[in-house]
Image 1 (cartoon, rainbow, N blue to C red):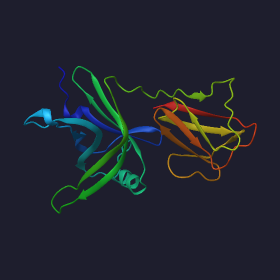
Image 2 (cartoon, one colour; image 1 turned 90 degrees about the horizontal axis):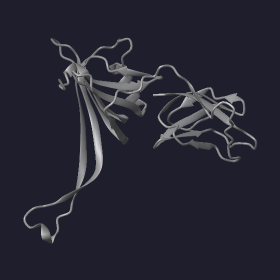
Image 3 (tube, helix red, strand yellow; image 1 turned 90 degrees about the vertical axis):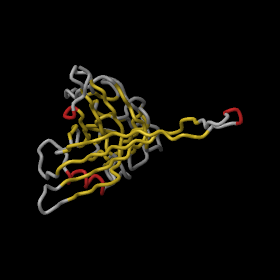
Image 4 (cartoon, rainbow, N blue to C red; image 1 turned 120 degrees about the vertical axis):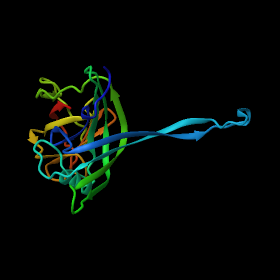
Length: 232
C-alpha cells in the first residue's frame, strides 16, 4: 500500500542541535504556490497563456495546547522563536504504509501565532510559517545524525585566512551543525546564526550550499582556523 496515514504526516524543526516534532499538533498542511506571468499574444486567440514565475510556500499547523512536552517543541518555544525573528530549519515528512518516505525541507519564519481558549473546551493553537529561500525535496529518508563529527579542514591540513578580511566562505559547508570554531588557537565561545558577532562570537550562515563564517575583527597575517561539525 502507498497510502499515507495522518499519523505518518509529521513536522520537525531543528533547534539546539536536534530535530524536534511539534507537540500536540493534530493537523498540518504544506502549501506551495507558483506565481504566473501572463504571456498571451495575438496568436493565442480567445485563450490566455501563462508562464511560471517564483515559488512561495507556507506551513500551517493546528492542534491542542500543551506547555510541557519533553523532546518536543511547544507553543512557548515557537512563540519565543517568532518574537526573536529566528529563522527555523524545518522538515515535513510523509511515510506511506510500504515504508516509502517523501521529505520537504527549507528555512521558515513564523508569520502568525494564535492561541484560542474557551470556558468549556480545551485550548487550541494555530501557527503559520512562511518559507524563505530554497525548498529541497527528496524521496529518501533523511540521513540520521549518528554522532559522527567532521573537521574542516581535514586533519593535517590548514585553512589560512586573508589578512584584513573578517569573513570566510567554505564550499559545501552550508546547512551543518557547527560544534566548534577555533581561529589562531582561540575558540569562539558562541556560534550565532543571526545578527552581528561581538567579542568572541562567530556568525555562521548558509549561502546556497556554502557555509559563511564571520568574526567581529579583521584577520592578522599568518592566521589559520578550523571547525568541527555534524551533518544534519
